[in-house]
Length: 261
Image (cartoon, rainbow, N blue to C red):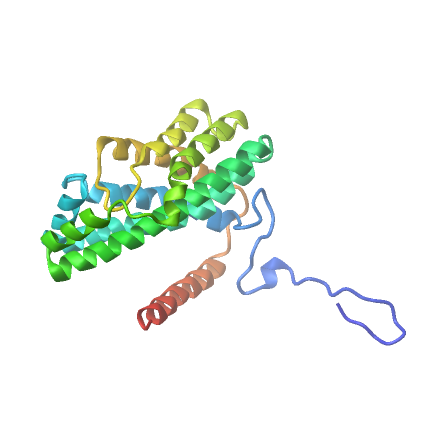
């Protein structure tokens, strides 16, 4: 907004999105996080979660075997738990997008399902931090020492234990909301509800229920993500290249700064 003494207030004309070097479309069902972030999250989050679950499939579910596997197969287990953690974090824009679409017809279910599911993601991210610490202990002190330490501290209280119900319940509420709002058909809504069966806690391996849960999540969200991405004009190639270069540079810079402490 510009002003001149004695003259009426004049509002600046916003720069058209196409004229910006990195345009952002602040419109649609979920202006935040937007069509592209929400759509990519709906596709990539479930696929990364599923990759993490499948990579640890050869090893027994309980934590002693998970710690032993980290010592014997460090690269494979690092990839498994890393992709699972990244998939968990990437699901938050997917939740916002899904809840926004549900909220058009079922605002109550969208609100509580979204809140509970988001709290569940916070809990899983906390568990991922504990997993990382336990694995570092196993690599430096051996699987036996790490197993003994985890066994002695497994039931220790932490504030995120209060969110265990949210880890499971949020997906169930969202599934009901997605079905009632007709965002998902009954089969895909049931598949979304199956996500509640994904085991929670620290150092959890893969079970048949884990595979069913992530398969259900992929069936429910990946096609929706494709729909979201297609719901609007495609960006120009130059815009895609600029955004890609900016995101890659930002990720590299954040990684370097993070490693520096």
